[in-house]
Image (tube, rainbow, N blue to C red):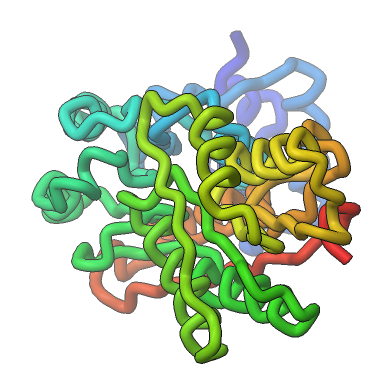
Length: 335
């Protein structure tokens, strides 16, 4: 395989000139850059990434830890991270915590041993329930920056990318109230994680502001038969005319079960839920969704981490929280 030294010899320039030309240095003239790149392409020159990482003390690799690879939203965020990282010449290594605190800790320890320059992650459910954050603080203290997305630990000083969970649910609920809905329910199976709590708070605030209305909750647990639980819920609360769902599964089931009860959607009961376009298609009629723009979240998280990795200040303070606004995509489950 051809080396920088061989390219430099053939072009009759220094090795430093070849290296700078390949990296588009402003110190090198355009003609020289063009000649160097053309010869490098001719010989199919590839930089030695191992040698480069040793020299720069960087791996150009990002560790990504997500709680669940089967979660459609998280998978799309991962896609956004990888696509954006590649633009800047970074690779990613992905680990799955499976919602486990111990697996999350193990993933951090495994990759922090010289394999990556920093982390992008969404906090595992068990970590949030137990409010365990020391493993994040320890990683940052070791000189490895972290960017959290979606589910974040607010007491950890790091960059974060979130959506307007509270405001989006508040707005959706207020929309139902303006339609004249009187019995609006909130269904969730994520009430024990940060985003679920924010969404419930948004719903509750809108209902209590109405003064004449009372919050109606259905909190689903892991292992619950969602269809059966929603069926029982509808039997108990027969006058429900609106449903706000904190997650995509609950929203789809809420529509399909309402139709099963011969309720006309959306004339007699409207349903809106946090979801993606593809998941909303599983409901008939199609679910109106609060769209989170997962790929944009992933891209923003990658941009924030890479900016910090390549800045002279490194991981010192000036942390930021970026909010990616959700969009209400109206379909036939609402008026």
